[in-house]
Image (spheres, rainbow, N blue to C red):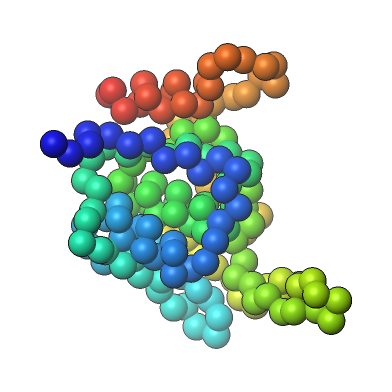
Length: 157
C-alpha cells in the first residue's frame, strides 16, 4: 500500500547542492523536466533526475521566509509544473549560484557566479516564490502549526 499524500516542510531549509535538488525533484516527478535554468554564459536548463521510485500521491509543500536557494527552486518547480500546493509565506529570494572558496584562516567565502531562473522562467533572486495558500503568522506562541493545518486542509480538497 502506497502513501496517498505527503507534506514536505521546506520552512527553514536554506538549500543545498544542485545535484541533490535534481535527485529530489526526480523523486517527485515521473519524467525528466526542467526545474530551473542557470544563466552562466547562456541559459542552461537544470533537469530533474528521476530514480527508481517516484512519489505519485498528493503533495503539499510548506514554505516561508527561511526557505532559500535549492529549497525555493524546488518549490517553484512544484508550483510551476502543478505537482502540488505551496502553503505558507513567500520564500527568501536567495537563489544566485555561488562557488565556495577556502580562506587562509580555515573559513570559507561564497561568491555568486551566475543568476538563476526557476522552472517558471522567473528570476527568483530578490523575489522569492509566493505560496498558493498564504498563511499569515500572528507572532503569538501557539500549540498548533497554522501552516501545517492549512496544508492538511488543502490536501483534503
